[in-house]
Length: 409
Ligand SMILES: [Zn+2]
Image (cartoon, rainbow, N blue to C red; front, side):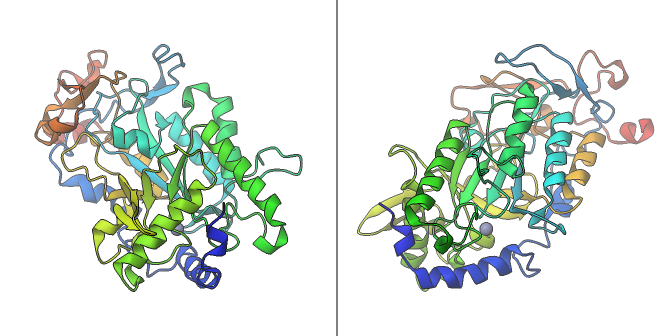
């Protein structure tokens, strides 16, 4: 059964206009101005963000043995901090020139390289929400979200293989070449009823391909995504602005029917937990973004609602974590590069795994933020600031006075 294609054709066409305006780099987009550049500033005032510890210890290096059967790969030599911040990267489409919503494929591949070298490993949004971040000691989680199912994200070649010149193809190639990168996939935020080029990865306009063939292609892609540990995320039926819904029920329909239309291609028991707000715009009644009813009492529940900007998000173990408003990091030109430089100079507020999924390690400066009611059987563990094996950092605990770092630089 395919609900979406029969629902609101005219509306979908109108929505495409909105989509193109929005994702084409509309300056007026909510939150764009507070985008990636503000990420450090946004957290600088937080206690624990002024620590000097680790200022010299951030150089990535290849150390450690196998964890969970995988080689460790590059890690960061800094104390674990599972109360640190996590980047939920936001990509839209590939192409040139670059902008807030366009990344060249070459730079997307470079992002994979630099994140890996700096000790990052992909996880899904569901894993973060569940606190299920099982990555090696000395590595940091990073979530890749791809919005709008649009151009450049995921095609097949004529031979039926995943096109290596797409984001999914590049990501999979990177996985194969770097086993320590891990097996998690990206998070695909899909618009099931939008028009080309956002009609499920934008191969051809709907009329350009017979319906049965189009649906078979979508089905094949969704199967591939699930087999390769990607997460499917709802992004509404066709990218309508929820703040412009004529009433709460219409907003709920855009979300609920959107979810149904995506689920038409998923196994019956697949639970969509992540929802991305189109343009970061909330429905007037905010709760409609995380739960609602539609079509005579059917229900949806989104345990994660993704904003459109905001910078690195707090840890799921932080009592400031709000799954209903998770900040994202727009991969605008230069933004990720700058953030990695900042964390290289000072990894204090970066989430760094202790390698043990049963414990939550944190520096003393973060003790006040530990959400003890969300540990879910895990043990919270305060750690000393500097690793014993780093004599230059001495015994200085996390949260020590900042001038020392400046002096050493
Ligand atoms: Zn979007």
